[in-house]
Length: 148
Image (cartoon, rainbow, N blue to C red; front, side, top):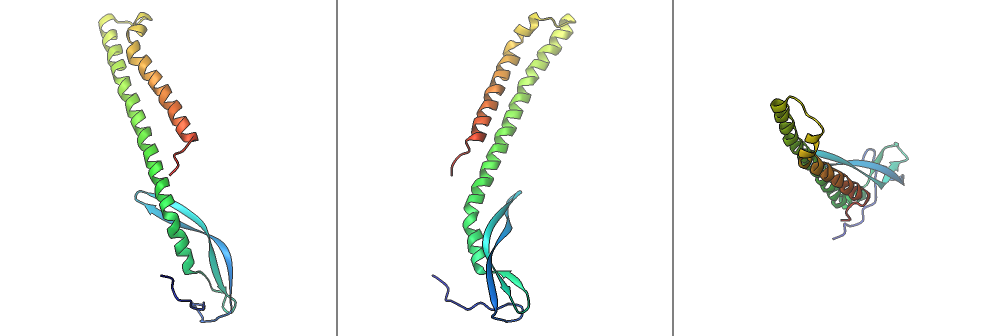
């Protein structure tokens, strides 16, 4: 339901000689652990009597309309961080068997020659190919973000 029209008056001096202009304002949207700045052009009122400036109630409506987009952007950022952490964990876990095999081989034979590189190939080649594929996938996803 629309609010009834009330003439604007200066909240500081009560004067009615006002000017209105569009001003760019930024509000911080708190989205849990991450704050996201929302910037919008809002009506700003100025009193010509005392010089006091303030933004009207329409600014709140403008910022409120921007919140769903901000939530979607935060969710996308969180998904990206989660994916990146999963890839790093997978790479770390794939390095553990390689380190175990290398350590065991060095303890048993005292040296590690080129023949062992192919014996250990399932432990280093497959994770390397998987990491390359994942990096390519993330690059494609970064260039084509999801549309919400």
